Length: 78
Image (cartoon, rainbow, N blue to C red; front, side, top):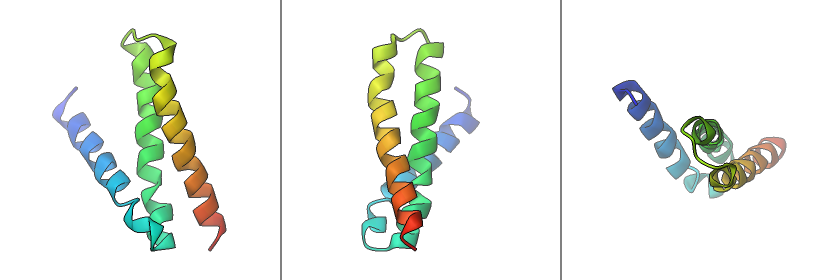
């Protein structure tokens, strides 16, 4: 991974951490849940490309689906 990829990964992880604050502030939570969705989508793509078995993608897919659900529900509630 290049330095740019590491910075992008770090930015997405910080966005995921702000998701906790979004439990109290709905607009912030909707915006912050975008980071984990993108992060987990990247993980689902990268695992098979690196030769990992399909089962290694399952945790990322589940967390990504939960974050996407949060995004849809919090965006729909505004």
